[in-house]
Image (cartoon, rainbow, N blue to C red; front, side, top):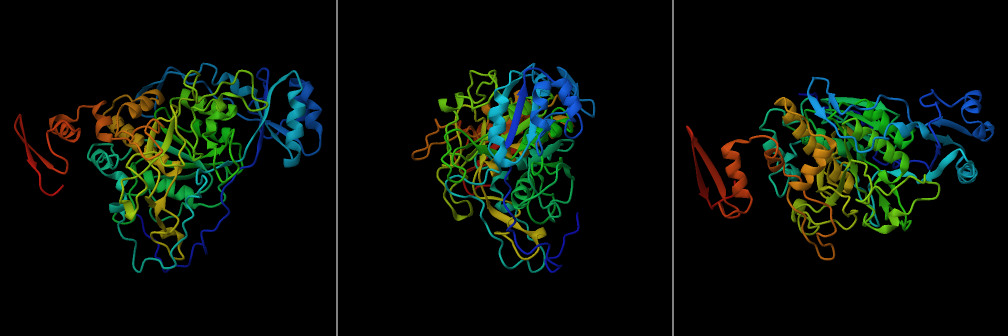
Length: 542
């Protein structure tokens, strides 16, 4: 067990009021063909640029303007890849051009007030097929109503942190939770042998409950408020001990990658290169899309809509990495035809990845659903109904709890001057929903790995999340036709992959509403030799 830092030690920081993470606008250029400059360190020098792209050389000869390849070279994924321990993972590439096109993307650095004129100038050049400006990227923390504004309580724990796992309802049996506790009874059920990288801005990595199976920041330099990233990690990677929270797949090895000082697509590609087939990559990010109102994060959408981010996600998927992407808190239908219209400067080949008629990114896109009414004394609507801020539509694969998530960070559940012992009861958004999906998939991959079975691929992970789970429900004004998908049910999902035995199958029948046991009953399984008997107690719920 890791040593806990006492609440009476000197404070780690005075408050949680760091500047909220927010990216910069990014100018991305795409040339007509790969330049041969892919992966050069730092800015491209002028002689190299003049030889490879003479038409552009004079633009980047100006003071304060530089260009660099957005992506670095890497070997394309093979149709069948072996992970580090030799387990084979089948991989069906969604886009054969996913790696070839990366050499055509460039990132332009210039003063903010010069970006628009530069983009216009570049679009006029025959060798440039795209020059577009991406809005600043942000964590999914707001919509019309700002989420995750919790402040730390003034007083910290008197002795040590108590056990908060009873407040993590998302761990419980379906339909209320994802049945993580059942997965923990199986070898590998805590995600042992699985690697995860969380891509966002910052994390409080000295937190008492984030001490085990952590590899720190592996890409970029962390910066800005660290509560968001801390809460994300706690959901799937909180340490297994007798205090604080417990992560869904706490046995997985977790690293972090920061968007603070790097282009978003570059971070995604570099993170994918550090992972093995079957590992997980989490994108805790969204940005302002077409039709956004300009009020908070209203109209923000998943980042795969932008061509370079789409290319980076496809690259990761082609390598067999399961990408889990926050669907965004923009309160928009991703089925809206507005997303079929390219932003100014997009390449002519671009097609809307939200539209099922087009080639998608292959990522698992996550919506935010209501937790069971009464969670922490609140009622956000019918369980598993779409929360009003969540994006929705055919592109959204699955939902997680989007409100009242108990995790590490923020300090509204347990505070004090020492951020190492902060916990929250109110983490929200597609930001809180997405880590639950990462945890569920990490648990499944650990179980498959422990049995020496083929791991889930990006394609099979999406399919199983769509085909199993506790179904979305209606809410007033938010019918289930506004799709955010099912909430995962690990027992049901695993039942599609492995033989859970007669006792577990009996429990599944009892919980699937087939009349074996009334709601609220306790089902007792007695196994004697080859026989199985089922006793039903209609009294107190187990």
